[in-house]
Length: 185
Image (cartoon, rainbow, N blue to C red; front, side, top):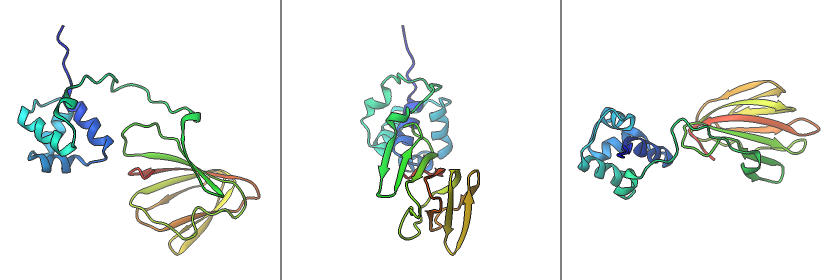
């Protein structure tokens, strides 16, 4: 029985896992972005030389692109609560709640353990934009020179590269869920 190997899907999965943009792989491989997109979708059959060039750019051995993908593309990816990655500081815990699959979106849970806990000493910036939702408690968000009080159920957009920080105003824990793209954790 002949089984077709989806080289394009392997390329796409490795590229996303390594967080490399499609246009960068295409350019360094000497093909157009639209051609690489068609290859990844399984709509084009690349030459062996093209596959070699892509493997070199992805820094993987050529054979890796021909291994059978045992995971189905439509598989449901679940991350159990007990398997979450956690970063803890003295007053704040961060939990990665996104399943560990290549994606352009990351979802985090930030838990402030006591009143006046701060996410950082100074406002920090990063390349990704965020949407955040206060699940529990009351917090202050500072974005550059602006600040606002947020209560349970409030949400905010934080533009990319804008320095920001959070302060817990509740007497108890506050919990904020946020999504960031591209992933940072």
